[in-house]
Image (cartoon, rainbow over the protein chains, first blue to last red):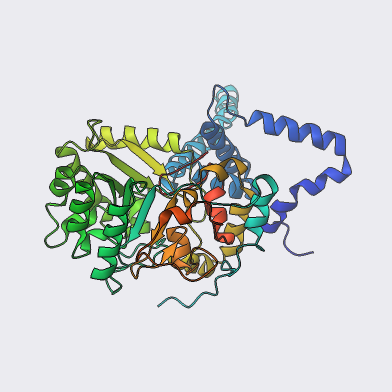
Length: 110
Length: 332
């Protein structure tokens, strides 16, 4: 076995079906339906996919959603804004998780 | 200097290739209908050397349509009233010494004249009045603008091209182009990389909003065109290690709904040296139209070309991928 993450693996994502075919088919249908245009456009959903990919640190998803974003007419200028929206929110989340420290200090300190 | 690339898309025979087989599944053979457009490539000389160019055009190219071929093209146009549109391309076609004469004579024949214009050629010596010339002859001007952002456009077409292109568009707008009054201004957008173009109507909407709000620029239509794996773009794909991936992408995105509207069915393409091709892409790959003796524009009978078998190769997947691609944009 080589590297844990290989870009060629993405094409074999569907191989996971063999372990639980019925559940896989339900997942495929759910995933496919969720990304169909609705009140949100296809492009908006692709941007959500990109943001979640980055936030979840999934290299396969970042590969896929970057290419999908380019095919939606977005450029790295657009994705640059998106990635900072993600990063700043992640920074805010990290800071929000420091609130207990603030609270505990208030509680136990004189 | 780029290394030579062994293109894998040039089967000499139209029958046994993956594209022809895919078309045959739903449509049988790919054949022309009636020819209504004469597209002439007047030469490979251009003031730019874009990274995606399927013509390999640049300022150093010397191929220019000679007088006898220009005369033969105009003769065919005059004789054949079915040819309602003259589509002039290059290179930068305006750099041909008889470009203005060709336009003037085609318009005098009552033909619709469409010029594939790179905008920056307006800055070349003696070309500053091109917008006025286009307007006086009511040419449809089809302008290259890969993307509405400067970064993407300059990456493909060269530094400073975006700003120069905006100036060119403003000059055309100032004369009434792009305002829905009959002087038609189209933009052509193509991906800046190895991926398919977005939905044409979405990109047209975004481009319209951006150019109007940021630069006060208007236009009539935006055409999305898929980059063809030919010449300079194919060389870039090879160097980047993306050739196979891109070809797979084109093939997997094959859309049968595009076949009926493929431009090769209604157009003939004339090369600078007078040979006849099914499209400008086949022209660059030297896949001549017909299966008998080579055809030339001299004394050409376009009626005899109706119903002909179109010669294809794997590059043709570029015109059938996704929403399809043609010189007039998406087709499905």
